[in-house]
Length: 110
Length: 112
Image (cartoon, rainbow over all chains, first blue to last red; front, side, top):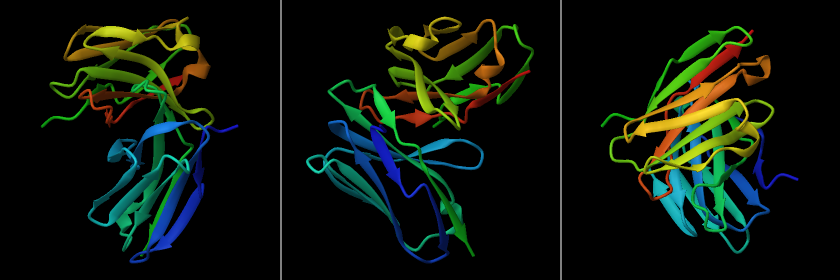
């Protein structure tokens, strides 16, 4: 089965609303990264997490290694937040071996 | 600061041709990665270099795929010979040893 399961697979939001994306891991994740892939195809790194939380503007992410999940909260969604969000987990101390989720496609409507 | 630069952005090849994709990592980053992205398989690791040394050669991709890093600021991915199933977006990423990845905009390959 999927080692990194992302949910939901697709999401539509009204501008100004809040939402949360989630990744569940069936591997022993030690670090997590979140990326946003824009319509041009570029993957932008949003967060690099060890267990704990980080916040950057309207985005907040948490990683719980014991419960094997990570979340990405989007507050006051804007049109430019549209794109595909990927989480990726590193496991087993092999820093380069990231396992990617299948992505959440987010569309923010005016 | 310049991010990861990939060229060409788009490539169309006939089956059997040789294509070379290029990547310039962020200056000072020691780790460089090549990934392939398709709708069905998602993101798959092709190659990984640390300080120009090949650490991971992608297992199933060894056959027709060859990544090289001749200096710390330039890497190539050669696909020879190309097959239609190689049609995908090829992404290069670099990392400053922290593990945090910075991706380029990708090279979209279409093999006819």
